[in-house]
Length: 141
Image 1 (cartoon, one colour):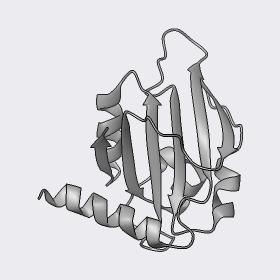
Image 2 (cartoon, helix red, strand yellow):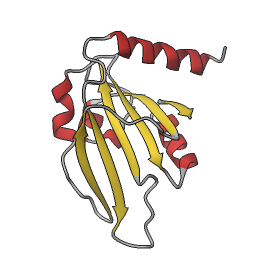
Image 3 (cartoon, helix red, strand yellow):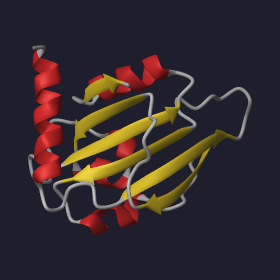
Image 4 (tube, one colour):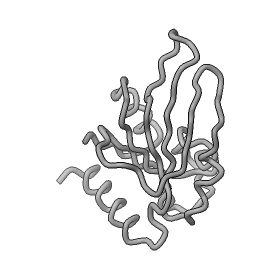
C-alpha cells in the first residue's frame, strides 16, 4: 500500500476516534472582483481535527481580501460530493487563515490538522500543488 495513502488513512481514523473530531466546519464560497483574477476554488469547506469545536469560530468569519471575496458560513460538517481533499498540519497561522497550512514549527498540538474539501475547483491541479507544498496529503475523490 502506498505510504501516503496509509498515512492519510491513519490521520483520518485518528481524527474520527478523537472526541473533538470534525465537530464544526466552515463552508466557503469565493468569487473574484475582477475577471482577470480567477480563484483556485470557488467552493470549499474546511474543518479542524484534534482541536475544540469552537476553534473554527475565528477563522470562519466573512473577511474579504484584495481581489477575491469569500463568503464563509459555519456548518455542522462538510458535505459529501467533494472532488478532492487535503489533510494538512495545522499551525497558528493556519488557524487564522486555512490556506496557510503547513510550515516548519507548528505552535499547536502536533496532531492538529486542517481538512479541506474542494467542490467547485477550476484548478484542481493547483489546489493539489498548494496542498502538497503545505506538507499536506492530497486525495482526489
